Amino acid sequence: RKATTSMLPLRRVLLARRLPLPSQSAEALMLARHRGAAGGWARTLCAKAEAKPEAAAEPAADAAEAEAAPGTSEGTDGDAARVAELEAQLSELDEQLKAKHDQVLRALAEADNARRRAAIDVENASKFSVGGFAKDLLDVADNLGRAADAVPAELRDSEEAPVLKNLYEGVVLVDTVLHKVFSKHGLTKIEPLGEKFDPNFHNAMFEAPDPTKEPGTVMHVASPGYVMHDRCLRAAGVGVVQKPA
Image (cartoon, rainbow, N blue to C red; front, side, top):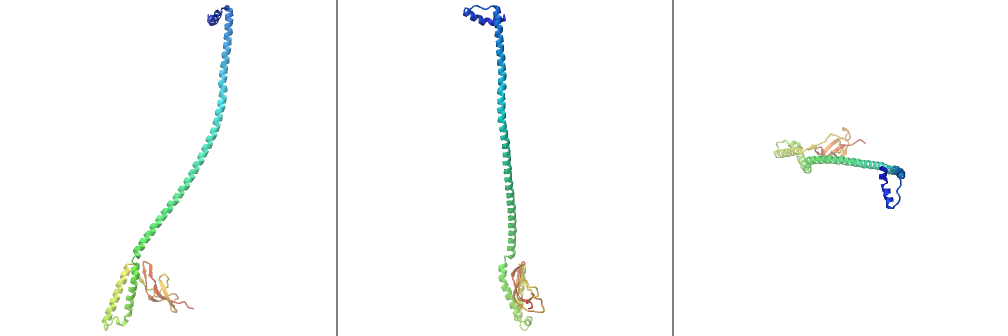
């Protein structure tokens, strides 16, 4: 029955063309041949279908490997370049940090020096603000001293010249009060008689030999000197013992 069903198309073609129908044995033989040919053709197609993906897979794999290999190399080179770039940036930032740190230290040092100088200037301004005024008053003090020295020693306490005595006492009193005011503002009178000559505070006006004193000793004070807060306001005019020839 299956053979008859399979041969129906062939019979229809033969009837349409008015050709004689084959016998049952001939139909069976034709059907067997037909099935064998179909099976061989199907096996051939299957083999080709199986071989085709394998053949296509090999070039695809080769192409993928070829594409992957340069990509891997390029990726490795790219990573190395990126690392080098980051290291360069890190080195540059480190140098900038060191430079900024040095600038900050210098700025702090300059600010500290400026504060110290400002403090010294303020202190000096406070100490020596009256220096010019005091220096001008030194002439007044010198004249008071000269006026007191002009009175003979025997008449300073004599009752025979009470007016001169009172004048002397008044001059001495004014000179004493003036020097107290000087001391209050840090101005000190120096009379270096018998001391070693110091060019910072003494002004040598002359030299003279004196065998009883060491050379370089102050032997005479022509005018007293004045010091304001350890700063020489006016050097004392002195005579110095001369070195022996």
